[in-house]
Image: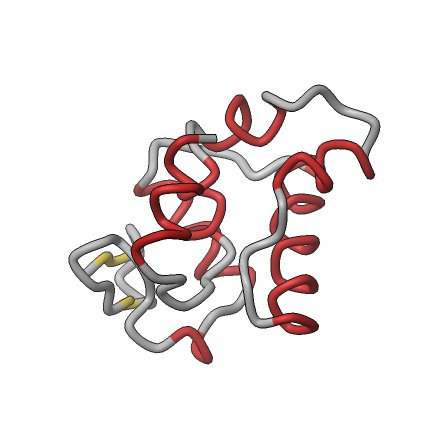
Length: 110
């Protein structure tokens, strides 16, 4: 469980650091998750990644190819990793459900 400093938000997470109830996600929860990951400020670039990941997942039900998100934003392939520490951390902040072991390995290797 992660709790915001003001204790107004209580988030249930699983052993992988993913929301147990992804439907509870909102932008405020993303801020709390990011803070727990050591990201004190979600910039416009962070939100571009989060929004792109959520949109792709809503459309296709799978993790996006992260290089496509980087390319669409005219950034180098390391961009998401530089912002979040790993692509899996971006997935966590985006509040998306457990993508499965293969996708977790892919997201952690990026």
